[in-house]
Length: 230
Image 1 (cartoon, rainbow, N blue to C red):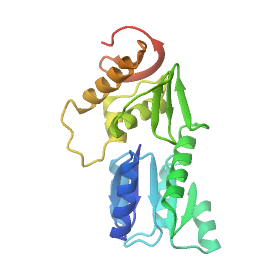
Image 2: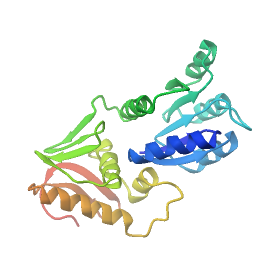
Image 3: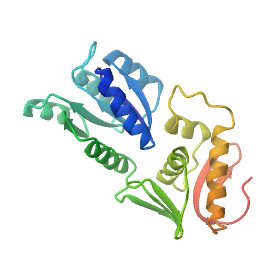
Image 4: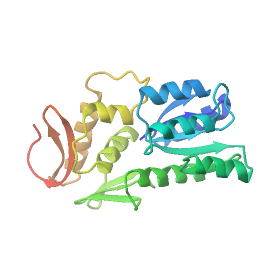
């Protein structure tokens, strides 16, 4: 999942971004309102973490502008503005959640997971596709009883496919949502990760083809499809 972190305190932003990257999220960072709007206009994000007190444009202005264009992107306000009036303003303006500094990082992660599940109409932390299961809470994946030894990036790719199960996901869409915008991707990076995930599923003793290559279109996560991808 790809997140935009908008926070003008650079030291705090670095700490939050480091923690979220360790959890497998792709993170873009903005340190003022104008930079945030630029990144929002040129990228697609699954969730935006938004401070209120920002240079150039404050968080409420950003939120109002985004909501005039987009009702679907999830926005979590993360701010020291703790007055009830501020919380009401944020929520009434379209924030999906409002969290006050100082905060516990584990709680921030939990709220992000919750919002992302809602974003994709998911109500459970454990997603299933046949014998293949993925736990978004523990960041683990199993095929039957076998734990799949996925890397963080492989888990992120598989998670995105799970959240778009039975739909074709293009390579561009996967790259857009799983890698940072500034990542220097070599041409076969995504293919390599898909191949590695398939190999680990097969090595678990399950011969089902869960990830199908759709020639010229992308990839699709399907239940118990046998055979070799094109």
